[in-house]
Amino acid sequence: MRRILTGITTTGIPHIGNYFGAIKPALQLSYEKNVCSYFFLADLHAIIKQTNPNEIKVSVNEVALAWLSSGLDPEESFFYRQSNIPEITELAWILSCVTAKGLINRSHAYKAAVQLNHDHTKDEDKGISMGLFSYPVLMAADILLYDATHVPVGDDQKQHLELCRDIAQKFNNDFEVDDFLKVPEPLIQKEFSRIMSLKDGSKKMSKSELSDLS
Image 1: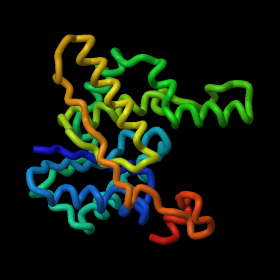
Image 2: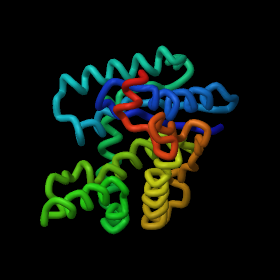
Image 3: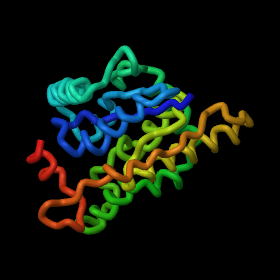
């Protein structure tokens, strides 16, 4: 049986990009035979960008409604709020102790933040929290805790899963426990992986454009 897992970070009101890029393709997979599906509200990831608890609470409710109104059946799929599962953060700490800093240095989000600092200040780490830096480790814990076999991702999100795979393989090798942590496979949703801009068809639609369409 395949186990698929996906989540949406609760930092705002869901838009059409969330629907086409994550919700719809994930739900379509959940309807297939021999599939066990896990869908979650990533409110721990949200803290990296959003520190207002009320805004996160509103976003959690709105994203949950988006999933449910799109056809998610809690009787058929596991649907949960990330922060309600303490084992996720416990596993994230364990994984962080075996994950090489050099691996996380390659994270696109971290590299982009460093580059932005290079462009504006001499301090390359200004404003970069450990949450942002270790984001891939928490994401790996999200996936590995449930022995997910497949994770739906867009073309621009493949690196996240590649880092997760590297972390799982290193853990298994370090502790000589073959397949203790299941190494997940990506499910590339090519049809809906990117929504192109209406202004410039060669570029991915911006978050503001996506929100305007919702």
